[in-house]
Image (cartoon, rainbow, N blue to C red):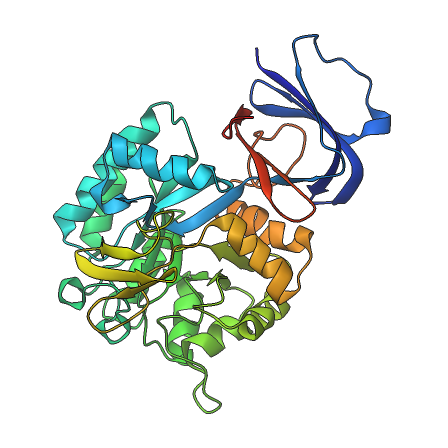
Length: 390
């Protein structure tokens, strides 16, 4: 029976910060969260005891939009590549994620679903895969970004119906261009089956998004990027996302994809639960500059910025969630508690996992991060298991 006692931490909870907090973990679950002064020591002599010395204790990050890392891509899913991706991101604070696909053929996407489903059925040793995020192929060639426009197709509801029947509960989120023929019908189906319907890579007008929200659209991927921008006479996709509280929005907080002032605006209009931090990381994350592949397209990474070799469009990122949290605190000016909510609580809430994930509370899964006052990540626990060697 594994047991951990962490004391003297600044514990970030949904109710506020416990300045001299203590958490007790048994068998991967939090059994006590509160003030150190209120603790009656019931831990066994064999418990691992950690004195935090005033460091932050945050819930593990949940990344709902990530394509890969450390040389591996979810589109090449097998046990080895899934281990590589989940281990890399676990070492940077991500304890749960959605395996995110790219625009591809039906057969290629289906192969990923088969592999991820098999992987999730076994004991996952690193960050936990919580489902699949299908980004495309039902998106707009006008806003292709780094995805292959030749493989983009109008929404094909029979594909989803078959996949859902074969892999119930596996598909957690789907990104589409709602203005495409069949888009509204697909959104309504997603809503009825508990799958997050998200707009992205879209040329949708303000009115298009309003129509989509009416039938179940509830989310926007990498807000501001690859979508019809705000104009004062046609608010576009961005205007609809900013002004409709029914739509949550992701943001890539790396200082490359979105200016800090635009992110600040998003924090102002999406408080408290409508903003999610993501990485949109590709296989190059963790490997430095060089030549890479993303969805069959050549990518050049220079000074940490990933762009299509041909055309120069931004091609995902090399971001980690801990770096996104640091950027939010240092460059955007939000509190550690708010940044934590964007990176953990809000994603868990969106996925319907808030009863077990996304915050530090008794009864929840022990996905925890120990972070220094300078925001250096010192330890990660996934279900109570340490990811970083002491």
